[in-house]
Image 1 (spheres, helix red, strand yellow):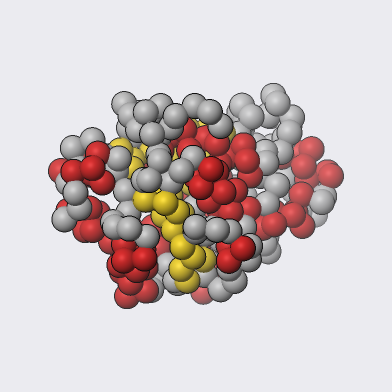
Image 2 (image 1 turned 90 degrees about the vertical axis):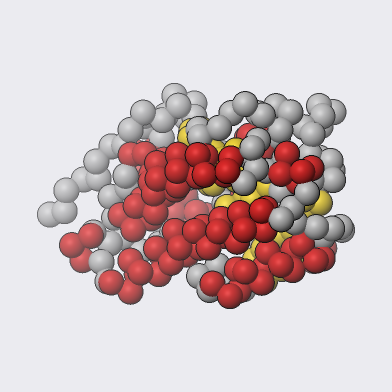
Length: 265
């Protein structure tokens, strides 16, 4: 991409970077000249094959592990993180009404999708306090939300609740708090609808499900990881989006709502 995003030599940390949106985001930021640190949980996937990428394992549910992740990122990739892309997340594949959901499922989804982002943002902001003015000038947090956070998602209330908390709780709160540390710091979210990622592959093989999922979407297509990665890069860019703050940007093909699932007999 020939357009200058102002991200050359900027340290970007991407969580959930081993596949799907995360991996595509890592590759794009690398193309834009950023210094990229890529977090993964259990499997690194293609990350070791990418040159100039610092790949670090960390369980985002673990306070000590997250603090160590930010320290190692700073030590191994030229200084403190300027841009934090909170991309990781789990979507339990089994359908489960709230009335029937196991507490263990609810707690694990909350731990990964909500407590993890809290720990990451806390460690990131603490590191930002002692960072240079140049690092602070480019400071940005980008959450990956979801149409589930806007419209809800029957059978996946745990996932919907976490995404809504990021989009409508964390973003507007942190956009007011980050400026106390970095006066030009920004916080936004990019919120996709269905994306053709490995996590969604099995679900998207059901043509009837896809038709129903896209019924209120004018563009009538499932997004690619690249569609989302490009919007992440745009919102993280201090050149293109330097005055965009506290926004939840839907990247969902114009989705207007959900159709109800057929009632159980």
